[in-house]
Amino acid sequence: MSFETDVKMPEDPVKFLKGNMADVDESSVKLQERASEVRSDEVFN
Figure 1 (cartoon, rainbow, N blue to C red):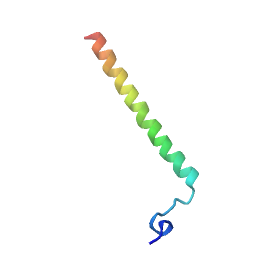
Figure 2 (cartoon, helix red, strand yellow):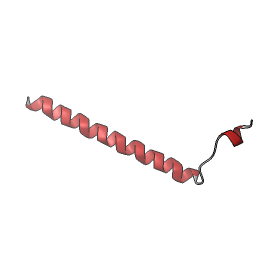
Figure 3 (cartoon, rainbow, N blue to C red):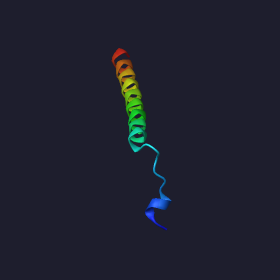
């Protein structure tokens, strides 16, 4: 069993990586928004 046959490469590696990066960016933005909500809640209470 060789590495090439085990792992199926995406058709377009660059597009694939950019897609993953976009997902990561999106989730980190959501985390930041959430963190700022929590912070403002603590300030007002």
